Image (tube, rainbow, N blue to C red; front, side):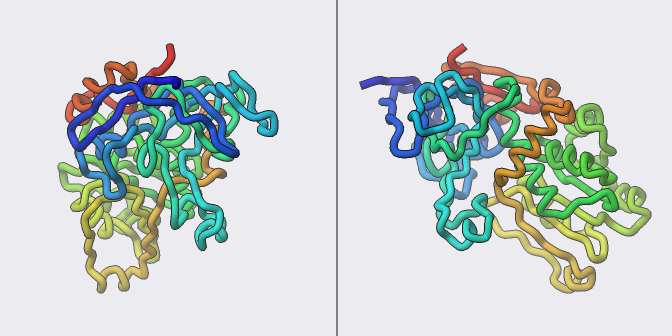
Amino acid sequence: MQLVDALVCMEPGRLQLEQRPVRHPGHGEVLVRPRRVGICGTDYHIFEGKHPFLQYPRVMGHELAVEVVEASAASRFAAGDVCVVNPYLSCGRCIACRAGKPNCCVEISVLGVHRDGGMVGLLPVPAANLIPADGLSVDECAAVEFMAIGAHAVRRGGVSSRDRVLVAGAGPIGLGVALFARLQGAEVAVLDTNNERLAVARSVVAVDTICADGDASSATDAFTRGEGFDVVLDATGNQQAMERGFEFVAHGGRYVLVSVIKGTITFADSDFHRREMTLLGSRNAAAEDFERVMAAIRSGDVPVRRLITHRTSLADAAENIPRWATEKAGLVKALVEIGE
């Protein structure tokens, strides 16, 4: 029986490196070796016990760059192929899948959330969820999934070059949202309480910024000449921020909730109707969003190198993830390097 190292979140607040037996590929699966694993807000929420869709213990990791180790002759993959992983495993039968929306499948199983993910030495994944990297580096492959979240949210919001867009939250997901809104030709502003993150948004994504610690309403009014934003996208994961976002939406505008929380959000129904606002949820990403991001990386529109600020090994991640969950200074995107 082959054993490999796995980083397991045993319960909220406790990570443990242990050896686990390799599950060999089943029908339609390919055995891969994770090479890079991006750490995102979902992973921090799992560690902190804040994720609404999770059971412990769990091997985290869904932002994956992998190398094929073993594939059947019937698949299009061969040992050594470097791939991006679409971590959203869908049933293909439910109402959402039949409507072409596997990202919100009724029975969705997300690697690293609903089932064990990529912080492990070897992992079987469905061949249908592997995407050939076509020249992308392993670092770039690991950035595709979180950028696809942003690309999907922008597509959900119907963002166009005619729109003024506000992105609330300048973390990695918010930066991805802002970047793909700007690539659509929209006039984009990013709102956050953290001036360091706003500086990253200005320098890396080249957007205007608004500090939410100040008089945000006056600043947003000045940006839109008092009309509000055609599209507001929330990527804060903060209840108060999500509720406040309604006030920034223009009459006839759209509000897209990208982040997810355990709690309930409320809004004033009369104001919602007065503006004839459209409220949208944006969950995960679809295959076309992955392809959109990969094309943008190839063309140089996604500055992956400038987004990756921290690195760790699988062995050291048990110490670093708890620290990075609270020490955010200078942190944009951290990667776990495996098999180097």
